[in-house]
Image 1 (cartoon, chains in turn purple, red):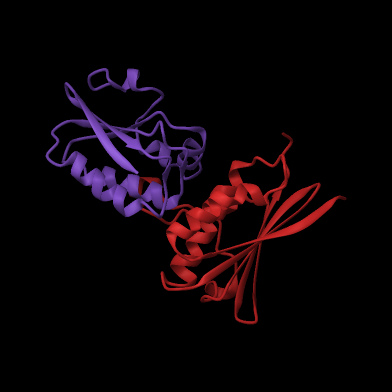
Image 2 (cartoon, one colour):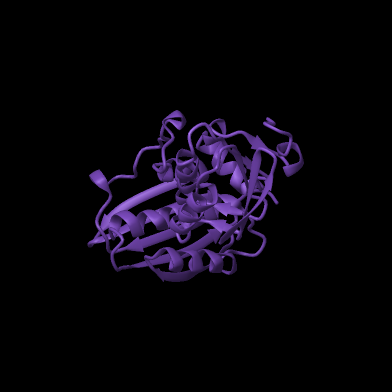
Length: 112
Length: 136
């Protein structure tokens, strides 16, 4: 599991490269998210398009990443695969995040 | 009722070993079973054993997968600490607005399984998860 990012005006897209965010990589994911969002002054978007599976440890790591965002900066999610969307829905954590179907809709400045 | 021979799997109670076991799960399932609930429920159950029964210490987890035409049954055995109250934990999810970073495991297991049985026998935890076969 590795992260990479692209910057757009007012938005940083953070791509997860790796098929799973589970208990085996939760700590690594948290550290990488902290590094990828440090000093940010605007919205970030987590592209989960490659991620086919998260467990509760992975979801916890994503919530951690949200809570450690710089003050006033949102962390949105994009491109959820069905099994990832299922975990968000079952835990009702889908109401905590702005979730985008694609990166295109998310790139609109301050888009919803 | 057609019953297939049970298949046994085993792993050490560590996150990487658990991931490896989940990757091997598909070959232990009867042909044609493709139910994403199984991997999620099992991942949560295995993580719980590693984290709570063994307290992130050393231990083994044994699995037995058995099936009939109506259902798939996965029995987990470990030699860690018993469940609180010697019972299956309640079907509860934490409040999303509190931004929890965990606590969803048993809620997810309940949501994914059609049956959950727990027994403490001879110093072992025996957790059996049942999934009704879905039409494919």
